[in-house]
Image (tube, rainbow, N blue to C red; front, side, top):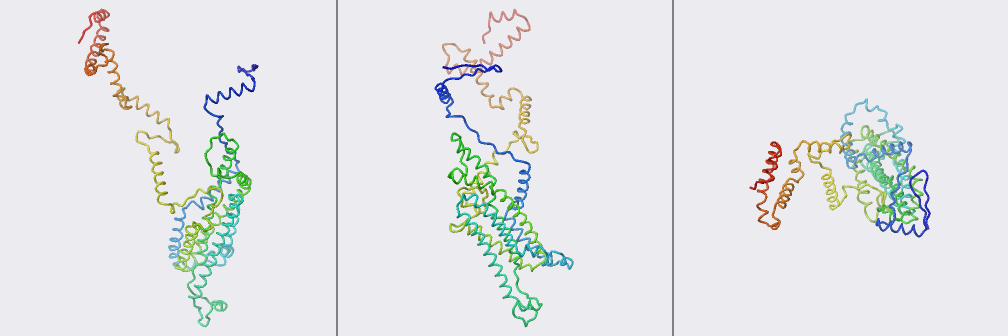
Length: 473
């Protein structure tokens, strides 16, 4: 049984039926539509506030400071800049030597450069702890790998600076020849002159390169929020036709851990990432001061070369081996880092990337007829259609058909239709008749047009005569 009721404010009649009838109608609609149920749409992102927009703008600026310049160009600037600026500093005047930054006892040199690795290791330690505990989903091996990388970098810094001091001691002499040791020479107010490789130049460049490499764990960090939202929605709605995400193969326990820890650590990760951008800017400035006012050219160039060599040996070779701690952002149950090194791609990967790039360029190319006007970089397709319509209006009908590729079809179809209408009924389909028909049809159409024109000028009598005694050619 079913009952009907009508809403007085609308024209829709609402019906209530039994449960069996509703299920039958639902199954019938499923069979008709060919779907098991309604398609569920992906959830929209949460609305953001003005404060969040300002924070993300500041984070974007810090990201440009760290990654705005490719690391290969940055290394080029470090090496060439150290060489060229050192040549200029050899001709500095006495007034330049009295600058505040030329004094080795200035605040930045005493509290930041001499403690440069302490500041760098502190920031990187906090950054590695927060990021590893988030994307590792409770796996201690990921955090252990990050700590090992910091320990290796600390060992490199300590061993290289100790090596610089040993070289200076072995190659040095005191102003007073009676002092054979560096300590006694300096204690008596003399100068010890040797090949003093710039430890400051080494540690400043090495710090920046290590910060850039470890900071790659932030690339793609903001996308984890979208991955979590889409994956959670897809697991709740099993009928959703969803695409695979980096979180698709994760267990529910790992997904719950990531959903709980990620919002808690993201704010601190952003703060430390911005501080890393600030300290990179400070190290670049202090490197410029060091190159301008301290050490000889060869001492600074050798220090810069050793810093680049240590960075390359660690992050471009050793950390890519199986027995190494691994690169930053790796080792977790999912991959989110969006950065790839184009210099270390295989030949097949380079060819594929080049093929995709060429295909994208080919799809984006426009011919001279398909040029689309743009306003502020956005194409105006309406104006393109308007220009095409104006172009077609200026052409004749035959030119339009020819431009559309229909000119030949139009003539052939019209001649074929006329030939079939005027062919004797018993001989329709004869090839010989079809071969001779088009010429006769053309003459017939001209005579008919002349008769019609004559009838329109002379009146209805000629029309009757033509109908009574038709002329056969």
